[in-house]
Length: 151
Image (tube, rainbow, N blue to C red; front, side):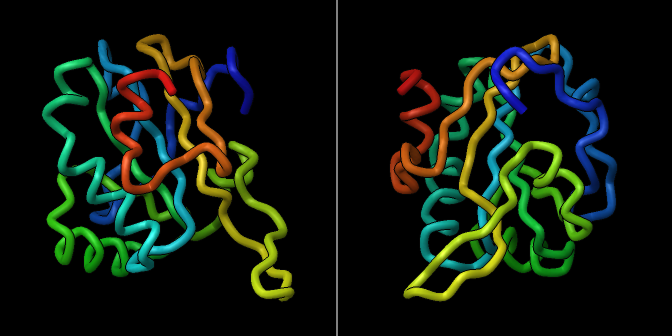
């Protein structure tokens, strides 16, 4: 997915098995953020920062949707532990991460593996990608501010 691309209407299923559709967010801008793994420090910081700034995001017309390749059960625990107020897509078949181009080879401590690149897509009211905040740009502890200020 690139800036200017139309996103698919069906994004996937959330932690409760509910289908997440772009068309259900009429009149709102969507913050679709992809993160590597539930319960890890960076992902928890990012999710909690978005949660803590939800009122400001909503005032600006944003709805937040998280997505990772973790399953629904993992998402339910992550949401409960951190009192998250937005849905998390359980992309266990990796369809969404591949469609958005955020799945690929990563390296940590010299070990190579496949995983999700932390990336946020800002989708406008017409379902078009308006902005992309890439892995090297995202500040997990201050992500809401990046979205709101257009950084």
